Length: 424
Ligand code: SF4
Ligand code: SF4
Image (cartoon, rainbow, N blue to C red; front, side):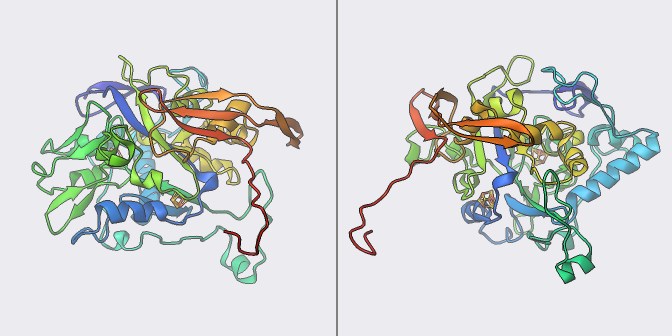
């Protein structure tokens, strides 16, 4: 089993497949603080790709309410329990060593526990490439199971006598978690497929299932820790998110040949989503690209974190964690960078505040941004620290350097002349 470098874990890990890296990588950042669970993203995907017979239960994009919701039901709780069992059997702890945290190679420290690939060698799943399971039909029943359900005891909820909601952490809480295939750097679905039907495209790192090679063994369904490949009973083969690749290739007439964000990203009402392509260096990691907004959010500001990095697939979806949620939960879900990410989001730097305005400012993929400084417009004290806000303008450029977005931090107000009650 070859060793590969997983920068999210800060160490080499075993990966049961040949190592190969694309020239650029499909990636995205979601700001969980802003999602309203309107499910517009979910329906945008559904109405584009999974509206046919046999696809009824397929939600390539879904938005679930944490901590109780999940699609398929309890997918992450089950995976974490399986990993725990593997650690117990191996006499190990799924712990992070934070000694070298902060360097480019080990931004969150070093994960000393077992990934799903490593755990498969010690757990009861010897012979499988990764610890995993195939969800039952019952678990695929309800995409919005437990939607809007908060923590807190049943008695508390019945009496509406909920614990106080004060920052930094709410005692009673929930948050929305947006999910799709992470087009992982080390995809477990790909490694698990005995037919070699799954491949990662060299041009953009999108992970696809070759429908003509697939025989429906469902090893990808069991292997993917995020449970994003799905079996279609009418065709007897598996399907998964295709990252709207015709749009990424610039085939949509709207952007006239320019790479365009996916349907779920473009449709986002809450403006929580920013998607793009990051350049991959010779070593397989992200090449330095300071003015790419995704690079800035993930690598420079470290405000956006991978989902369950300990699984080991190096997912390419990143989340700005919800700032009101107990930190221990966030650390389990996003790794040890969670505290610092919440802190940075709560007191955003001048540059971060400007870059956050790029979310949903354009359907065309932004490759580079510039900031034009504006005047100071606000000042406040946050957690005892002085914080200043500037009306800077962020400008986004497409692949060819053409301007596609221009947004100011302070939203401009337009007053219509009051000619009539209904002057529209
Ligand atoms: S999220 Fe799952 S289906 Fe998507 S690339 Fe990763 S392992 Fe494969
Ligand atoms: S469209 Fe945006 S705001 Fe609405 S549920 Fe999806 S991610 Fe959340």
